[in-house]
Every structure is written in structure tokens, then in C-alpha cells.
Amino acid sequence: MHKKQTLGYINKILTVIFTAPAVILILWELLSRFKFASAIYFPSPSSILLRFIYLLFQDPKFLSDILFSLKRLVLGVIISVPIAIVLGLSIGLNKRVSRFLTPLISITYPIPKLSILPLLMILFGIGDISKIAIIAIGIFYLVLLNVIHGIHGLPAVYFYIIKIYRIPFAKRIYSIILKGILPDILHGCKVGIGYGLIMVVASEFIAAKNGIGFFMWNAWDQFRIKDVYVGLAVFSLIGLAVFTLFDRLLSKLKWRDNSRLW
Amino acid sequence: MNNYRPGEIVLKAANISKVFGELSVLENFNLTLRQGEFVSLIGPSGCGKTTLLKIIAGLIKDFSGEIDCQSHDKSRLFSSVVFQDFAFFPWLSILDNIKICLNNPMSDSEKNQLALSYLEKVNLSDFKSYFPAELSEGMIQRANVARALASCSQIILMDEPFVHLDFLSRIHLQQLALEILANELRTVFFITHNIHEAITLADRVVVMSSRPGKNVVEFAVDIPRPRDVNKIREDKRYLNLVNEITELLTEEVKKSQQEFYQCIKNKRSAI
Image (tube, rainbow over all chains, first blue to last red; front, side, top):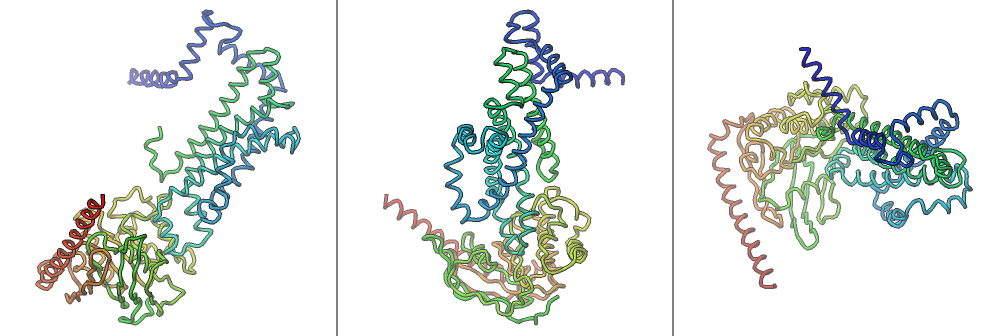
């Protein structure tokens, strides 16, 4: 019994350690500890962690930078996701709207979103509005395309049922279409927010006074390499949180076949 | 629930034709359905049976011919359909799947009661809160029948509803259909390519030709109800009907095969 328990603990620890990030961090730590890698360009993960903790508790500007970036990201999501869902529903469900709008999406989607930033800065100035706009645009397309894809993926027989049993509009949209494409919406948000983070950092590189992107740009400017890594860590932690959140939500949908989600 | 006189014509389809591109699927097909009648439509595969059903259900709008359903009370659903694939929304429980299709002005508790009463009739009341993915195919198809019945539609259209089921579930469902429909006196239009099933269940069997679907002949099944799926197989009238229809259909299939080979030959010589 005792032995089994210890084996269980060892197993648990092993599963946590034996993931790619953990292995890479350990190797990195060893390489820089034993001076195989330059400590200036590749400071050890432990020293980066210490710096991160120091900044978090000692430097109020750092914490406010994180909050500014998060605020932009959240506002971008709040603005883009509802518009993307409503537009996606109308394109996916209505032939005329689709004929009218699909060409517009086809020509605007391939434009690298960052290349619109200069234009947005001319239109809205270099303040928060242009930044939030570019983040929202980045998220918008991915959610929109996922919503349309989700609707096209619903079996034709669902639409037969809607027609035959005369299911009223509100019920049709809420209980059937939206619930049916919920996995696609969540997936779109997950990928979209990842893309939104790119927009956050890029927009903060240019003409910003705060935000993690600004913090990293400053660090680069003043050759504080550790802080550049700290900035990267912040972004990957936000990314991890977003991915975990949406994976949790997806696995909550009990009606789906979740056997392929580990 | 049924304020229609038995025997009253509920649907009269005249000269129904449908062409998909260059492919003529239905040609001048005629069909009359009377209140309380169970009509089976049988024909070789690909002859346009499902197309006809979709036309009657209003899912296909561009066809030629006339569909007359003048006696239809507009406040009631005209048709409900039991599809051959398991047309349930996987994110709703079985009970909710049925309730979402009840769109008459009813309170929620009335809907609940109605849905539950039909789930009980198909012996599924214990599974009302299950998701479709948690049920077997036979159970889903039973729930499908319950949904069609609960919607109180004037006619129930069934498109090979038992085709995906194993032999035993099929027999079980046929027996269930016989029992429920005997009590409810619903008008049912039942598509199948299983001759035994067609005769066992129906008052009248309509035979459709191979593509393009035309009327061939109609048989009245004058075997008294209540019927028993197993016992009916020993009935002489049943056996005669099976033989007659089998012969007819075999010829139809032969014809369509000859046409098919001719078509291939023509294509080859064109190359």
C-alpha cells in the first residue's frame, strides 16, 4: 500500500516534469549554469524567474504594464467576438448576405492585419483606440471564419427539422445554431485570442507609453535582456491561461465526443 | 386531437415531376392519402422515394405538379418526418429534443407532459434526460417516432426509419409502430424498400417504378388489425402479396439495370 502510494507520487511528478517546456527549461538552466551558453544572451531560467518576481512585487510600473496589455486584449475580445458571431450567423444562414459579404471577407482576410496599423494610427491617433482596433480586427476574422465553418458543418437534417417542425426564429438561433456551433466559437476564440496577443505586442512596440510590448521594447532599447525574457514569459503565461480556459470549456460540453481530448 | 373524419382525403398529389439537372427523378406521380390510413411506398433504390417525401414535407419547393392539402387545419403542423438518419440535436437531451419540436401554443409543463407521454409509449421514459449519443440506434429511432407522434401533425412521413437497425430492433420497432398507430389512427406515409415491412405495417402498398419514379400499381392489404409482426408471416394473403410485389419489383430492377448498362454502353461508344 505504502509502496503503491509513493509510486503514484513519483508518477505524478514525472508527468509534470516530463513535458516539453519543463525539459527545455531544465536543459537551458543546466547549459547556462555550466557556462555552455552565454549568460548575457541566455540568462538562466531561475534568474529570469527571480527578476520576474522582483518586478512583480517591487516595480508597480511592471504590474500596470501587464494590466494595460490585458485591458487592451479584453476590450478587443469584447468588441470583436459579438460582431463576429452575429456576422458569421448572418453569412452562414443567409445566402443573400453571404453573396454580399463573402467577397469582402475574401479580399480583406489575406491582408496582414498589422499592415493596417499605420492607417488606423492616422485615423484614430496613436492612443488606445487604434491599438484596441487592431487587436479586435485580428481576433474578429478568426472567430468569424470559425463561426461560418461551424454553420456549414451542421448536418442538413438539422435544417430539415427546423423547417418541418416550424421551430421559431429565437429558438432556432439560440437552442440549435448557437449551441451547435459552440465548439467552433470556442475554438475560434482560442485561436483568435492567441492571434490577438500578437497584435497587442506589435501595437505596443510602436508609439506606446505602457503595456508589456512597450516594456519589452524598452528593455531591448536599454539592453536589459533578462527583462525581454520576462516579457516573453508574461505572454506565454497569458497564452497558457487562455488555452487552458477554453480547453476546459470545450471539455465541459458533455454531448461532444471528448474521448480524443486528453 | 384528431378533428378529422376518418377516410377524408388529407393529401392529394397529382402529376408530381421533379428533375435534378438532366436527371428526371419523378414523372407524373400520383398519390392520395386518407385520414387514418397507413400507406407504404415501395420501389427500387434510387427511384425518387425520398424526393417525393421531401416534396410532400415542403423541403423541396421547385417541382411540377400539384399538391392539394385543402383540408389542412393551419393551426396544426401538416407533416412530421422520421428520417432514416438519427436526426437529433446531440446537445439536447431526448426530452428537450422532442420539446423543441412542439411549437403549438402550449405551456412548458404541457409540452413536458405531451413529450413524456409519447416517450412512455415507446418505452423510453427512463431515458428522457439522456443525450442522443448515450442511446443505442434502436432507442434513438424510437425517440424519433415519439417526436413525430408528439408533434400532432396531420400526416407522419417516415423515410426508411428502420433501415439502419439490426434485425431484432427492427422487428421490435415494427411491432411498436403497429400497436401505437392502431390506437392513434394517424395518417402515415411510410417509405421503405423492404417488402415485408411495407406489407406488415400498411393498409395500402404503393409500388413505384425505377427511376424516374412513376406509379406502377397499388395493393390493398386486407389483413385485419391488430396484426402481429411474427404471426402475419404465416398469413396466406401476406405471402401472396409478398410474391406479387417481389415479382413486380424484380422486373423493375431488371429494367433499371438494363437502362444502366445501356447508359454505360452509350458513354463508352461516345468515348
